[in-house]
Length: 284
Image 1: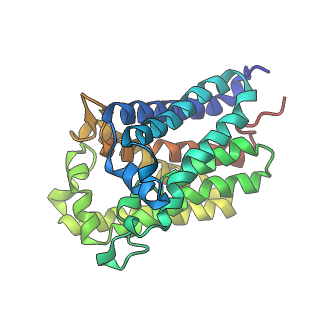
Image 2 (image 1 turned 90 degrees about the vertical axis):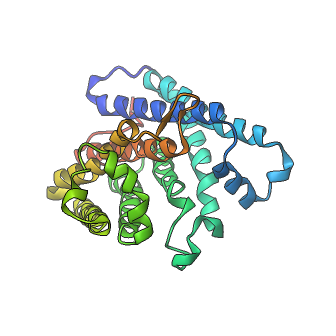
């Protein structure tokens, strides 16, 4: 059952983006070795003492590499897509459940929903949505749209809301200052005002995306505003010195940034479904 139909080019692009992001994550985790983010997850599940840190590191790397390989195989053969969906759901569910641990929240800001270490974890919601679509391609168009819109809405609302805190304003300072597209903002506004403006932008994108789910006339501006957030994030991989390393390709900061490609894939799904095209699960 070969995937040959050229009208499904966005599908092809999505699988390539999934393969690219997963391969870079898997390889960089393998090269980097164990790090604190894996500790947070194993501590949450109470399994830290069951194996060495190198074993847990290898498991994490293997999960992403499996997604990358299955994504590439799925381009030409749809029979691999349910397997890809199952692995994707499993890889995303493990870190997502750790959000129930207190270590992910900023206690000094009241805990939930003031997110700290969990900022990178909530991005697995986007990966989970991709996996669900792959596993259940025959869902109604409306269900698919909402499944894929939900993680985009959540991350823009959540991290956008955090932009109004001083902690987050300081947290994005190096990223924004490094960007040829955004650094000018600091010459016009102060640190907090700049962060607030970015937060307002995110919230407007949320409002447009919700509106687009209810009325398709808002679809194009919603896609453009939301997509701009995640595409801009990818530019930080090249403008922010700390994103890439010679020893491990991506740093942990680079991991955080490249996960935004998963949101681009979700936006592709929404666009395809809204335009009446059949996404990932092809009827053949």
